[in-house]
Length: 201
Image (cartoon, rainbow, N blue to C red; front, side, top):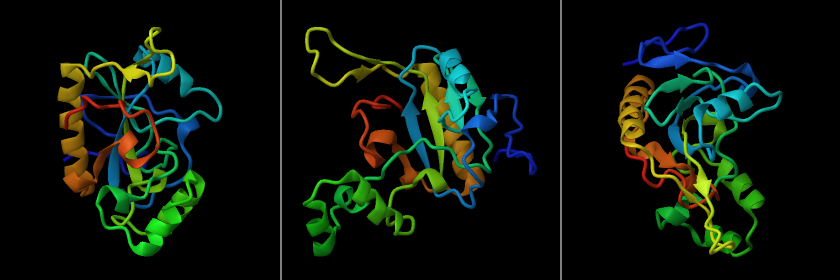
């Protein structure tokens, strides 16, 4: 289990480098129900770390560079905006009620998110308010030969996956998060389908 500073929410472990940016804090997090794994859409850790210094920046709680170095970029006691609008979890799990299916006939990510946020976890996916975000440095690269196709994220490095496995395991043990509540970003929200596709935890 991780040792967490009770005042700052900072992880106290030699494998985690403190790089907390208050600019990405969005209010106190009361409870952690899940973990969301992302990719940054940037080539370097420094570009993300620099962006977190901007006023009003968005970001996640941790950043793992291509060499596997782990940075903590937000307090574990603070929410960050890293998820976006939630998809209906009942679709993934094939358990939507007739009422839910009827509502989903009209495509509206905003309305879908509003309905999902009225549910309690685990009936919905983890959201900004109750999840820890982990960013893996990696760029989504477009193919000039197919300009209208979805850009494809870089493959997660072996060192990143090693660090990700360690970090997810430690966070799950410390915060009581079930394995079933760890997701790739595009599973829970409408994002690039290749994001974190090669991530392993």
